[in-house]
Length: 222
Ligand SMILES: Nc1nc2c(c(=O)[nH]1)N[C@H]1C(S)=C(S)[C@@H](COP(=O)(O)O)O[C@H]1N2
Ligand SMILES: [Mo]
Image: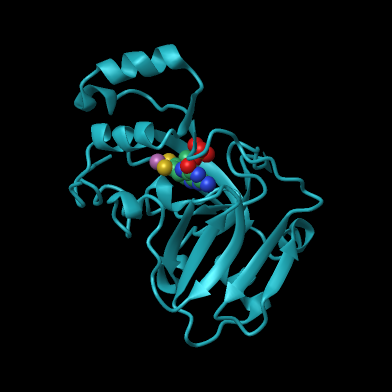
């Protein structure tokens, strides 16, 4: 597989091969959109979420038993409950959301916790340079440098709009990186591993860029 420029067909081909779940909110509208040339489609008003999983069901996480583990290059491996996360300083950030396959949702209001706040609970070791986010969905994970984890708006989101995340959108927590495509934003996060080396994420193992800059990666503009 071409490792730099994978078109929409390539992405969907991989999805089909991996029996991924795509749940369309409105199949008819999608079909119409798909039939249009990309140049026209990109001018349509926005638009709606597609819910993605790599498995065949949506993980259902119990708020009472949910735990986030902070492991690896930290001073103390730490386990946080949802209440612990909610007790950390909360931030709000509104930004557009872009999937690399070409769909966008405008003005998403995320609420959550900056990654540095979470790391400060466990204490970073100097050798730690990357954060690997591991999903409760088996097989899905991604990785981010500490430098990129400190960009504006980057957070572990607990809420979308005025409400907690819904299960399809990643309850209890998901990664938000406004500057990068959606595949970097792991849903159903249950572990943050601080690592010395970059560990390529699920889509990166299928040829996608590790730094998924919106508009500059994978041959897509927005
Ligand atoms: N665990 C997990 N996280 C994931 C995915 C996934 O399949 N599994 N898909 C990613 C991709 S490609 C996108 S575009 C967004 C989609 O977010 P949504 O499902 O809330 O619309 O989730 C990202 N996070
Ligand atoms: Mo995506």
